[in-house]
Length: 353
Image (cartoon, rainbow, N blue to C red; front, side, top):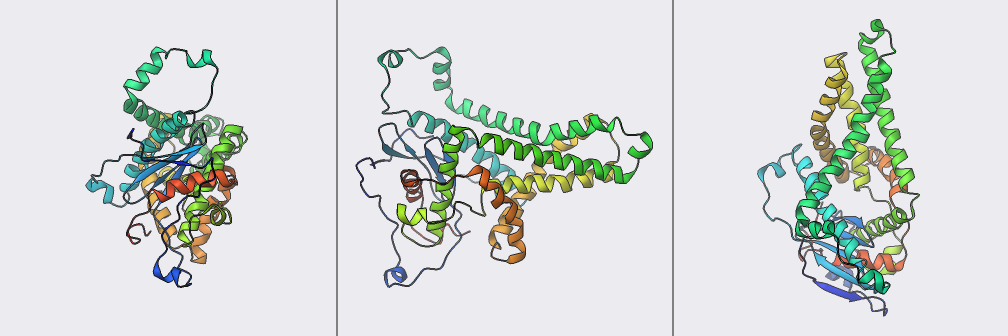
């Protein structure tokens, strides 16, 4: 991540943020057509990261009340596999996870800048661990991202199957050999997976610090919706839009969980009753394929979410966003706007979905 600061906007003094340039049609009083943008984002600690077609930028509210806007330097090279359907989803998901983890760590540091502390706290020397993390920043970001993936796979993929396999030991052997029992066990596994996910979201959303991050998530969605509607990116305009967006990472996670139920059920029908170790290994191996399929479904539904039939597929993800977003206030929207303005391309065709 680049250490170079691009821009600092002092909003504590009430200065207006710049607006998005209006095209000729809008200047003539013609309401522009609502478009779907590829620009997406992520909530940070006291900030928002926006990913555009040409730039990725973070905006963070510092301790002194200013907004720090900084570009996240990305590798501009795009490998062949990043363009191949059903493969590109896994690669893009991993790259975004690494970028998002780094942005999250960066925002934690920036949000503390300018904040007043007691002298004894400010005089404390950095520990050996702090010095190590500073020297090996990129390594720690990669390790954190990998650990996050392993934790998610273990909690939402492997643990439900482990519970099902333990429970299956109490089922008579003659029933276990039937095909329909395999279907039942996989459905129970899927229900447990969804239950774990819901419990995770509901409990996380009760934590004050997480609720604060969810407010920035809501501001990110509102800002993107305002931009897609073609309105100037002002706080007043942004606040009137909904905090629920059909093309959100929460929707992607729900699709992953739903597709996993289908894929694992089919695998169970083909392989039949197998050992606990075999079942866990199959689920681990199938994770990249499930992510790849889910990515393509999300893109397809995103293109056709105006269609009533395909809009139904977005409904569960929109409902789950009640747990991952909160209504933001004006100052929080100012941060999201600052991040959005930094990534909007000069050519308005570059970011079309």
